Image 1 (cartoon, rainbow, N blue to C red):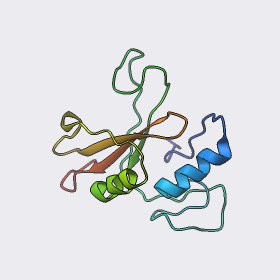
Image 2 (image 1 turned 45 degrees about the horizontal axis):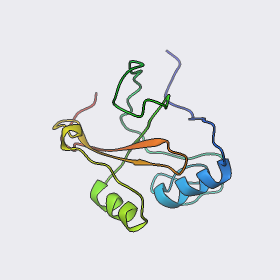
Image 3 (image 1 turned 90 degrees about the vertical axis):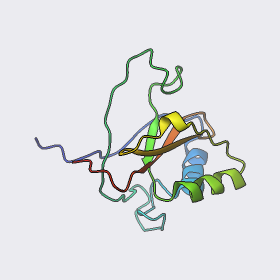
Length: 131
């Protein structure tokens, strides 16, 4: 197959510029950012690190994420605890549930961006093999 990976994620926003700035400030991601949140010259491209990614449709009545949304962003992160501390310090509500965590898969938490889009944060289990 010629598909090599996800090339982009496009979604509608009430205020695209403000939302892009929020993602940059709080997650170090989006156009103009590299894998460790560092800035680079291309304002449209976000350079990410290679690694596992899940592409999975859910049933229309799934309660895994908000029923009024068609998608949920899942971001693979390192050092989830430090990231959650940063969100708490910034006044961003963090949701956790021990039932979301799975040995061999990893730990999870959720936040919402200013427009209400769910963002699942996934710290993969370092002992897991996703091949």
